[in-house]
Length: 341
Image 1: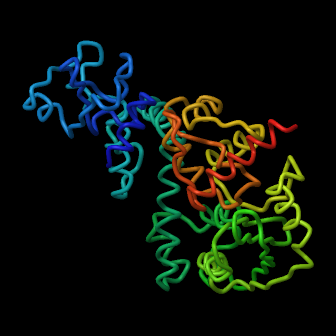
Image 2 (image 1 turned 30 degrees about the vertical axis):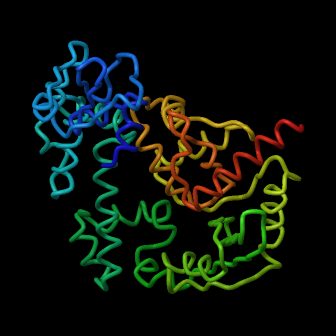
């Protein structure tokens, strides 16, 4: 973990980082855990340590408000330990915590239940196995599914196709796409029969086409400017400021948590921003700022879901899947258009 991420956690008073490091303030001689409610120090006065003992060896004393030595017993540490159990193949009931307490802790820290987290791990394992060539039946049992019905009932929402089609690399899927110039470089818009499934930005057509093909190498991808042209023009006009709102029919897959985050992002007015923490609070998960950031990073449809309007708590831009320079230009352009209107 770099100092930039640590400072972001301290600025947001993010309890998810309690137990992972402590920070010390040179001017006071005190060290705290990231979620300490005390007034935020100046950044140039802060030092970071992996553990309380290291801070004390450097001459700092523990904060009397947040008791950083107890950070190992926090809810964040409980969830982290439970995640390790689930990642090792265990079940929620193997975590040594009452189901009610564990569920509340997961919802506060990650925005999902323990079973949803475990289900995500199983799906990830299944996808890895079939990509290596395993048969669907073998892969689903090795991934931990008790029956094929458990996988198939989730397949449309999570894979966008049946498991058998996924194993074939999307064979039989038809995806049309168009590429055009835009103020931010080259723009790709791709769509299935259901709606737009990808909006991406890059410097070259080759980069865009390679990214589209990487997830489903056997899908039928065809360039069709006529079929996708109207949606492509709508995105370009939006970037040029001629179309304030961008309302495209979408065909995207998401977990329940991702969908809640993305819906909240679409409510951010043009010319405004929100922090990851503010989005987390808006969806009723005030300690899930990190999970919100992950949901933003996995957004497959740039601009249609405006993840570029989410910034760090300290005012920094944070990350952006299609390049931080594009995020900067987008926010600048939207702010100017908002002032003019």
